[in-house]
Image (cartoon, rainbow, N blue to C red):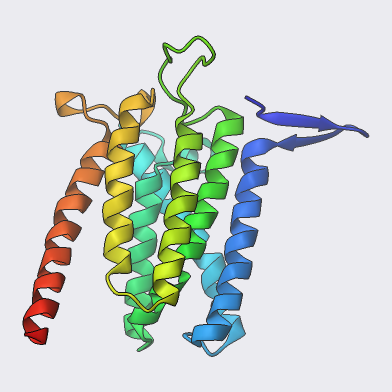
Length: 239
């Protein structure tokens, strides 16, 4: 791992915040460019506002989920700002809820939000590179002689880039159900990848399942049923 890099002149770069910054910068640029194409938000100021607020919402959700799982709420406010640990699904769910209701309140075409999805996926992948270098979200000990631990972060990076490219192509081809596919595909991957992770700090529960595996199962069932309902309704209307 390479949690920090010493540069000439005494400069020190911490890998995780560095790649997190690249991730946010990429998402910012991708979203501005994409918004010009789909014209979801007419004001550049509004887009900029959302691109500042959304990471804060994601951070808040991720920290709150971590604090709830950790179970130590005695010093919640202090730990929230100065403690360590995030839960991806916490930020993920809170961000989706926020942007959905924001668009409803602003009477925006929610269907156009799907065009921003590849940017979210690619930004997520870039952030996981920072996880790998920092050594967080690491895998369990690996029996292969050339690996100390399973590089679960890199598995996720590869998966996300492939999924992002696939959905980007589907969106450009005007195919439907892309958000369903994203949630279902990521839920399955995350459920399986968790078996290789040694991330007990984020909770191991009944039957040895982690917090992320339980959330993945819930999302898979809910969105799987919604996907089947959508598919059935579409097929029925065509016949």
